[in-house]
Image (cartoon, rainbow, N blue to C red; front, side, top):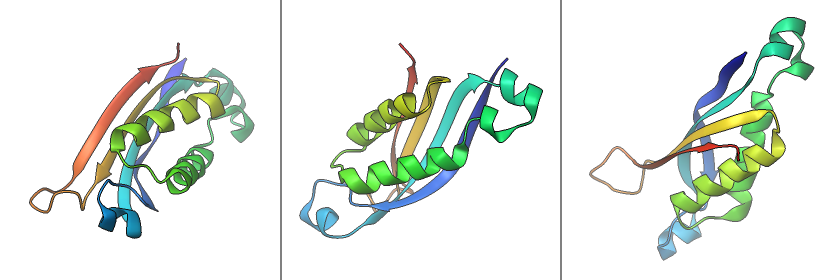
Length: 119
């Protein structure tokens, strides 16, 4: 029984960018993450221990982005997906969108979106 667990607009303040001013101060990025996983155990037991811990997803993604100080959103997205697959072995697919609102003044945001299947 496959389903999707996710987060919308997870706010993370971190260093991201290639320009000197971007390396000097944190910027806000927003993440949308969708994780496909088997719901059977959680649906049957109604127990958190059998469910995907989305609070854990949020804290792990936040820590990764704040610690790594990425230059590119593309590298940030790939590292995020790799970490999610490693941390949550029941996840079969990840869709991740990262928005950077301050990147282009004339645009609402710049973004990258990736989708990966577990190999």
